[in-house]
Structure formats: structure tokens, C-alpha cells
Amino acid sequence: MAKTVLVSGGAGFIGSHVAVELVQAGYEVVVADNFSNCDRTCFEGVQQILGRKLPLVEMDFCDAAAVERLFSDYRIDAVIHFAAYKAVGESVDEPLTYYRNNLGSFLTLLETATRHGGCNVLFSSSATVYGTPDKLPVTEDSPRQEATSPYGNTKRICEDILRDCVRTGKGIKGIALRYFNPIGAHPSALIGELPRGVPNNLVPFITQTAAGRREVLNIFGNDYPTPDGTCLRDFIDIVDLAKAHVCAVARMLDGKMADPYEVFNIGTGRPLSVMELVTAFEKVNHLKLNYRFVPRRPGDVVAIWADPSKANRELGWRAERDIEDTLKAAWAWEKRLNGIG
Ligand code: UD1
Image 1 (cartoon, rainbow, N blue to C red):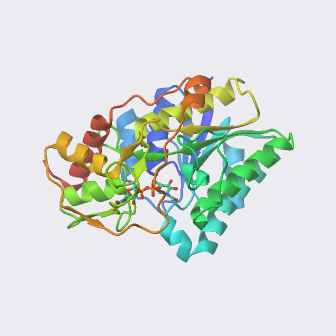
Image 2: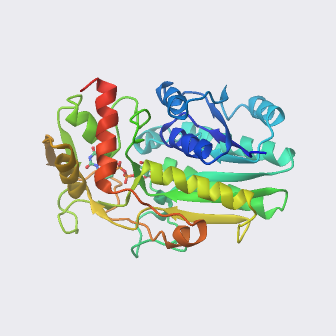
């Protein structure tokens, strides 16, 4: 019988791509979302890609009674937890909102799962836990550093909560995936990134500028100690990233974990500068972007990219899509959203 994977925050950018890949790999998927930071477009897109309906539970993961109902109604073999706030700047202004929501939802999930005899839990973490790394690329053994934002701190704390729960031996097994910079969209252009308001992240800002929804792309800093003066990042295609979740879930469910709590970097291992990304976007999509250089953005790390060899080796996963295809997909999605032919 197919195993069932609960995806909290499964209607969002990463969650929707993960739901597609899980179903295509043969899992049953239950999506839970409160639509606080996404609309229904992506969930509908998921169903369109799959050509079938998926169970959707509209609920808040901080609501203990609702989480309890979920675990009573479904026989859940694994949970992938995305339900969390993610805007770095907003978290600085509203730390309590971030701690309440991001820690509260995760604690509720783990308490409920423990009461139900345990579960396999995959936590959506971030390379932000490495802060400004001393050595590049970063491996999973690179030291975590003090978080530069409450958002980043919630990722670090949730990793620790998961590790400590696993250590009790009460049936929770855990994997934390540390994402580098997820970008792009599904090749069908039916799902993709849909930020509310002004995007904080680079690629949605680029695509919205290309679509004429933003006048100019600000490139934050061209005086960094890097080859072209702009920051270096490890941009990972969203479908590749989603596939890493399928590999991690399989590892848990097939009893292949080397340790009941594991951490993996999910990145390409190839640094690309902000300027290189902008130039590649223009080239593959045959357009000119209106951009300008502005001062550095406070809190930005100069350079960070992954050593993904542990994930390559242990999960049997690697990033496969070319950056060109990723940037074409990002633009195809934005065009579709804006009705551009
Ligand atoms: C941030 C978060 C990371 C989170 C990720 C989600 C930190 C320090 N970073 O990563 O935890 O997982 O978002 O995707 O907490 N840029 C511009 N102009 C723009 C937007 C961005 O030049 O309009 C530059 C930034 O200065 C940066 C690069 O593009 O150098 C990437 O920025 P962004 O997409 O916001 O991601 P990160 O800051 O790397």
C-alpha cells in the first residue's frame, strides 16, 4: 500500500512542487495549509499537473486540535513541515510573530506525532543557519553561527528541537534539509513562486521587473570582494530541490537512515553571482532588464554555496537542471501570471 506523506504548508512555493514530485513518485499526499501566505493558484496548479484531486485540509498548524484531528483522520507515515513565515526583514520587525508561529507550529506537530507513537519528520531548514561561513563551500559539519534574523533563528531552534525529540527515542525520526537559494518554477508553468506584495527575493523581483510590474531591479552592492563585486549564491532549481525531499522521505521510510537525526545541504555546489544570474536571465529569455546598483542590503552574506556531496552520496540525489532552464521556467511562470504571450 502506498505510504502517506503529510505536507504542511503544502500549497506554498516549495510545498506545491514537493507535493507534485511525491505523488509522481507513488506516495499518497495530504496537503495542509492555512493560506496565510499563499493563494489557491498553486494548489490548483498541482492538481492540474497531476490530473487528479489531492486531499486538502485547511488548518493552522498552531491549532493543536486541528493537528490532532489530522493525525486521527489519516494514517501518516511521514510529515514534511513547511508551514512557517519566511520574510527575513519582517521577522526583524515582528520577532514575536515569527517565534510564535514558526516554533509553535513545529512544537504542535511534534507533540501530536509523539502522542501518536512517533513519525518520520522532514524539516525545511535553510543555509541561513551557517551565517557568514569561514570556509567555502559549507559542509553539514561547518559550524552554525548566530542567526542574523529572528527568521533564521527559528530555523536553527527548530533543528535543535527536532534533534532533541529524536534523542528521546519516543519514535520521532528526523531529517533537516538546509536549502540554499531555491528558484525557478515547474516546467509546466502551472506552479511557481507567488510572493505577496513587493518580493524580497532576487528571482521574483527579476521576473516582475521583466514583466513591467516593477520599474527597476535594485542590485544590492557591487563592491563586495567577489569577482564582479556582487554577492555569490548557490541557486538551486525548485524541481531539483523538490526531488531531494522525495529521496529524503524514501530514506526515512525504507529504514536507510545512518542516524535517526540527519542533516543535508541541498544545493548545486556551484556559486553564481547576482550579476551572473541577471545576465543569464536576460540572455536565455532574450530581454533587457532595467537594473541599477544600489548600496549593500544590511545582513547580506557576501558568499555562500553548498558542498552537496553528502546529499549526493547518501540520498542518491543531485541537482540536474541547468540554470538556463531554471530561468526560462521562472520567466514562463511570470508571463503566465501576467497574461504575457
Ligand atoms: C534569504 C535568506 C535565506 C532564505 C532565502 C529564501 C538570510 C540571510 N537569507 O536568502 O535564509 O532561505 O532568502 O529564499 O536569512 N538581491 C538583490 N536585489 C533584490 C533582491 C536580492 O540584489 O531585489 C541580492 C541579495 O542582496 C543577495 C542575493 O540577491 O545577494 C540573493 O538574495 P535573496 O533572494 O533575498 O536570498 P538570500 O538573501 O540569499
